[in-house]
Image 1 (cartoon, helix red, strand yellow):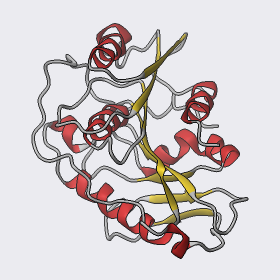
Image 2 (tube, rainbow, N blue to C red; image 1 turned 90 degrees about the horizontal axis):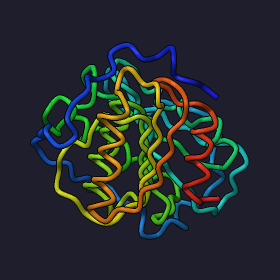
Image 3 (tube, rainbow, N blue to C red; image 1 turned 60 degrees about the vertical axis):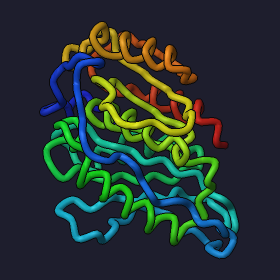
Length: 247
């Protein structure tokens, strides 16, 4: 399992979770097939690059051992600032292989995700297009679709996930900085983990404010602190996939 201590350059600055603003639409239109049985075939295991014509096309990872006709759980996994789809994939790949979870790892158009810079826009479109292609080719279980991320990717997962709670039933945020504002829909459950010695996004100014705020808003939040820096320890990654409850 990849720990991300060596992949931290460029992660976003600390911000007041209640003070940042984002504009633009965060709504995704892609939805799993209404007739997933029509897509049933032997899923081809492995990692492939989706051809969207982007500088950093999304990666799709299908674990081995899936059966023809099986409805599949899907998790969108978002990298941190200055990283790429490979880093997003590395967050959860080992646990996804163990638990039979399909991963979609897109890449941000700029150095970080658009709403972290202030405006929802091209990254929403990229994720929507990638999801539409996945839903058209794999029999994804509409009840088991989620979004996850690390650092700036965690912040974006929270903003986009809460805005699309009718699509994403679960949100996983590893060391988020804040929640980019957007209209909200649905009632997704949320998992947050954060290192107590995080010097990039210090815990007192981030997750310890984000989690109570989400709970006040009525969300079911599972929160884990661990004695470590700005990283995703393997045990936290595995705990998050177990928390999904999708096995």
